[in-house]
Length: 389
Image (cartoon, rainbow, N blue to C red):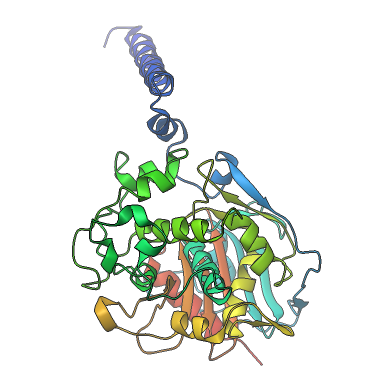
């Protein structure tokens, strides 16, 4: 290649790169100017992340006026640092956590913190999106609403609360079907950037409108298919049942304050309604208290937040009417033959509950760090089983 050609190639590459960026900027601008704001935001913000509560409208949740603090036993070495995960070379917990995008990792037993680590600038006061862990919180609120008489029962048809869905087969879809993800809803849960799932994440003032346009793909109760659309319908029904109180305000009153949440949080909205399938942001300690509440059967201190039957429906397995043992009332069951259950979210957010050892493990992170969902499941189970007396 003649002298000077390298500089020419580099210059040509940079010019083409800047041209591509200018074209991208023009495309984004066109989307925004023509009213196609949802797709413009997709292009502008790209892939979802745990700090997306910063880019969306949101409703603030305030710390409880009477905060509950876990007893600190982190210096007593109750947690074994040596562990083995199939397919992973590291043999100590600290090395694994430091190397896989973890932000927070907590182990709690009998209302005491046994292990608490934060990474990458995260602190006990930092909040992070829980992504689909939010579904488990919405389920809790539905249980509270039934207890408060705002929703009749899980056997109610969704059309009782969303009459606009009548005439499209939804008369057969019950609250239970939506909680168990057996509704038969035609909703594609995938990362297609132009699909319904990505659209619902980024759109503004659209959740109720688009939810009421959902249609069915098959008979309700046929089979389990995990889909956020079921949760959106539940939230839209709950919003109607609250008669003007926001879902966030209801969370504050019925859950956040009674549990003594130490810090505030944010529930992202589309400008009108909470993104109930993805977008509650809270601290690791406060997420842990949701798991502890279920471990206590809905009881907290001298009071009750939700009835024991609701917790039992979420934490024991049924496979009736197309249900899967893996998913009960929007809580995951990682193993078929034991009592453990968990909240689970995109990018490796977990609240793992082990009733046998009375342990709750919380992991928040920017990604799964190369561990598969099955490896995370095994790690969380190992840690929860290995607590020293």
